[in-house]
Image 1 (cartoon, one colour):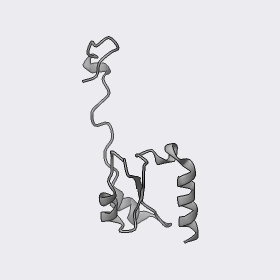
Image 2 (tube, one colour):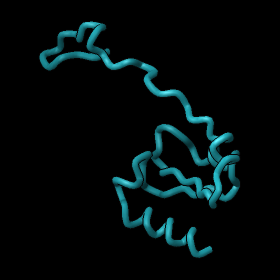
Image 3 (cartoon, one colour):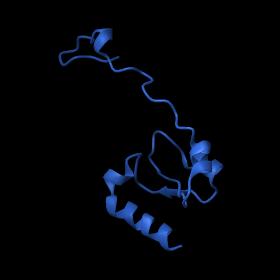
Image 4 (cartoon, one colour):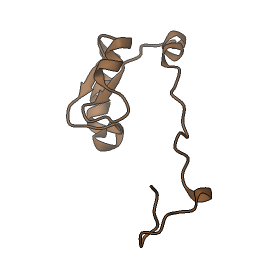
Length: 88
């Protein structure tokens, strides 16, 4: 439950919506991609698992020790992944 500082609940009209975002139609996006797509997730990703990604692409990569925002947590590592994908 969302609460203010001090412990009082927030009124419903100012609480963030529970389901603001819908899942991306990933299969359709992959089918429409014109270039190479590399799927990756952090090992601590709370939104997607490596098993889910490997169901779409057996070559999906798990970034050990990172969460969903790998690009923020370790941008250099992500750039290395991009460079590797671009040259392979």
